[in-house]
Length: 391
Image (cartoon, rainbow, N blue to C red; front, side):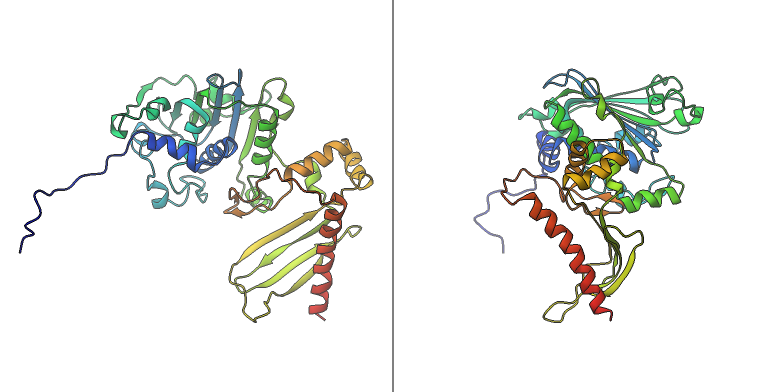
């Protein structure tokens, strides 16, 4: 029987406002550093062997430029018109491995590209697909997405196909190589350039140091070793102008990171069995440690399997002086480098999961000497407990 109170009915499609895409960049990307890192990860998914992050002055709001240049497989016009212009595309879900190198792709939600909207007001995409004779250019004016009156389907993106001028021998993509390197012509015929102009924030010394540290911690030390074994390569380059050019160059962890005073590493399986090795200060060889993690109520952990590595340093001046002398540095610089990489990083598929391990400004009166003491004692205690459990 029909409801006599109903006067009319129908259906209505959802029609998002244009500003929803700006929200992706501003709310889902936690910081400008993370935004740059998301774009670097996109280059990895595109099978790039090299990616260059370049900043050009003036680095003030509404001015300046950020470029992310890679030699990945590039995109066709069809890809730009569909995958790149479709928020939350399912392409990564359908293709969990990269096209050529068969890397496990990092982007799954299809929103990483909108990190560009957090960084600047304008984005120019220049891309050339391997094997194609033309490069594609597209221009995104993110300010359109700030218009409260516009709907998403009212925003237009300009695009064109043209003779290659940037992704070709002698073009911008060649700047991925140093002057003494001679890449093959085929290596210069594919890739992508993301050129972001009209910066939305000021970049200075603190921001660049945070960025370089974030990029240096992006790839797991385990995974970096695996890439070498697999004859794969992924190199991150940073290019800054004076007075920040001391941070330019290939991005790698600081040298002191490779020489911890104490080290523990190994694997834990899905039911809590662990196989670790440990090296205390003064030892030259790692000692094996194995056993089973259990809780007081008798249940076994179910969080694995996973790998773990702890690196610990004594931070007294005399202890750090040894590292400073080894690398021709100063105690101050070594301490600064260790401060930048301090924290707990979590990696999935070889790449860091954000925001875990991000440094936060915390006021604490706990003396550093006590922190050093407990860090050292923690590893020694783990060693003693493991020895007791295996006897």
